[in-house]
Length: 337
Image 1 (cartoon, rainbow, N blue to C red):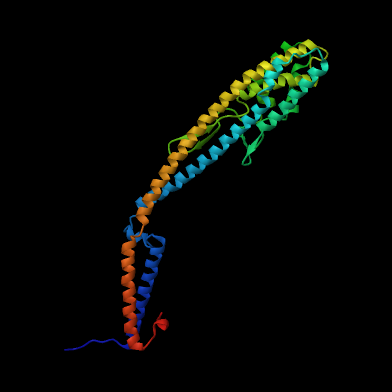
Image 2 (cartoon, rainbow, N blue to C red):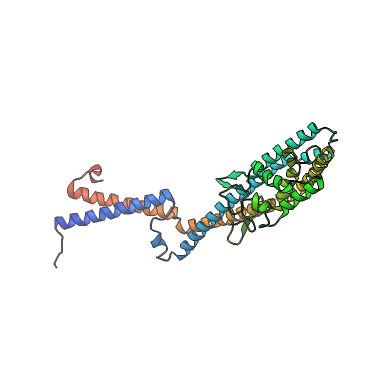
């Protein structure tokens, strides 16, 4: 009977190969134990990664949608804060203008007109508010403020009301200017710098979008500005020397401001509905993300029991290989490793 044997060099090469293979396997199993995920996902899935790719794709899309919803929530809340700040300036002003006795004093009427003019300036500054480097109420033109400064707006109104001699005439001229359609030389042409029509459309779930349509051109906002401007024009000298007419125009302003407050609350309510839609979207997205992450983890998870068993087997094989090698070459364990 013939016996086959291998030489020392071939034997050393074979044992080195076995050692490297076992060390690589032990490193892989140790990594799986620490991370909880299989190291060779392709082998786990036998090359069929379609399901995992679909899950990863949906995770990426849903994560972006959740970010969109978070940004929309911030933007909508910022708009609510702007309107709340505006109402803090104008809420009592209309009632005060209606309840003032307006004593026949040019000085008192002038003081009240200046107060309203200052309020107009403050309101415009707040309506020109920004969030995250974008103007909130400019529609799609979020890179520029929606309104011209108060002085420039009053310049336009001063030209429109020049030569008018009664409160009714001036009130009507100011109302026409604010209500004029685009192209007619009114508010939308001379004072508003943003866009009208549809606002930004923000996808917040795979099926839903939120539209931020509120702008400084909204009827409720224009009505509020109209009420303020009706009295503020007196600060430019309108109806000079006509105490009764000036008092009458202040009362017109008061009526307009009281009515406009209800409209502004309605606009805030519409923004609130969009906020509710965003909140629902965030809840839905969070649920979808949780489900997808569980599914992905199930595919990628390494069985801890199987991994521990395999790691023990590899350690045993390494110890056996070392024992054989030590007998052949009289190595100690430290030198071997």
